[in-house]
Length: 67
Image (cartoon, rainbow, N blue to C red; front, top):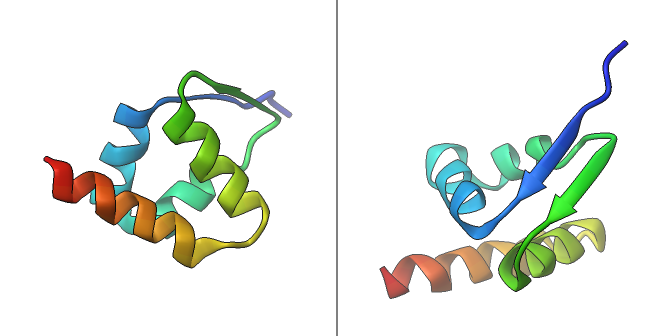
């Protein structure tokens, strides 16, 4: 059995979201340890932990619109 840790930052979350949507993000954050490096990642993590998936999706869409 392995120990899975994830380092969350805006860039890798945006990349994963664009690649596979919110389901890809939810699968990615299922791990033994999470290291969060910015406010965006913290907000996404908190929203998904609180089962506020639609709010997390809206946050991603807002960031995509800024690109």
